[in-house]
Length: 441
Image (cartoon, rainbow, N blue to C red; front, side, top):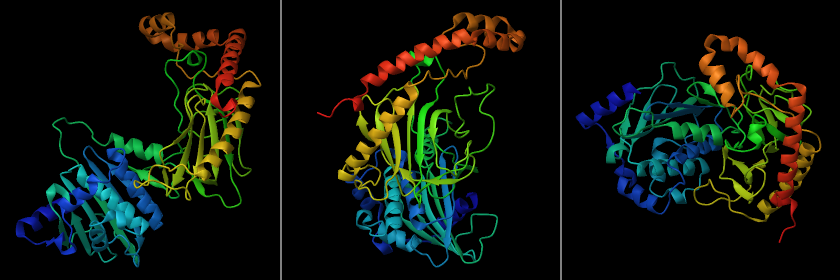
């Protein structure tokens, strides 16, 4: 990218560029469009880029997140010019009227970034001969540069096109990373994309939309885990389960009642999987629906639709829903203009009813037997001042010996059984108060 930046500076100094005005494009028009269209969060432009790549059918998507820079690139067949520089420049004049899905996603992302006034914003394309062009929209400019140098060291395969999105944020005077929100958006909302997504060289792993409260009576009894997970795969599954890196979860072993579904996810108590799924799931698989509920039975119940590789904003179903969630294929659901928020229709209402019935059964499976106590904390339990002071502060190196001894003492059978009874009572009480056990008004 340093070569590209130097190239653009040299071309600007020499006046060797084309005004994108040849395509009736201007920054002012892009901003006018943005006044009537905006994404929910500033980082959501990256989700639109992922949707564009999915619509193009790319085989892999690479993202690099630096301190102030976002770099995204992929390849397509050489005869596919859907998102060429000229096509994108034309589409930017009226992004909401664009009929091609991939180009619509891309132009909406570009408009959203323009509204953030980055110091540099570029969209580039190169063919297998190394010939390329760049559309630059940063710094209040709209320019097209020809004969741009290929930005990658390894050559492009014959019959392939290379596309690159580059955005550099303005320096805010504080030398800290400004791309944490982009990283969070990718990991939380793009885990079930149909193709591999690599962030700084590491492939995205599965991610469930669960939160565990930090201050909660149940959290004093057990470390967080998933009470129940059901994964369903029909004859032609539509969603992709990404692979996970194999490796140990922690220095503690799991109780016999818990199963390691994936190294990237909390362990699971009650689980139903398709026949071809093997745990721990470290290989890519296919599925249609996933239902789950955390052991704490805390929070809203929500449905998450995956559309064009991106998890849309969740549809909240019950205020007191035990934190239950469902991940469904959203290829047929309707969305608002952003393409990231679901419009509630009869289809969505039907999905809510079906998910509610699954969640009811899952809660019965959780509370029907004493749930296990899972301790994933080193040396001491939360709230134990004695263990904190003496185990961490005074013992020093002896903590390596005292820690296992204290863990053994604290996990005696009688203590575990007492915690199990308390946990079961808590879950039974919470389960009785969940909204979806009550008749609809």
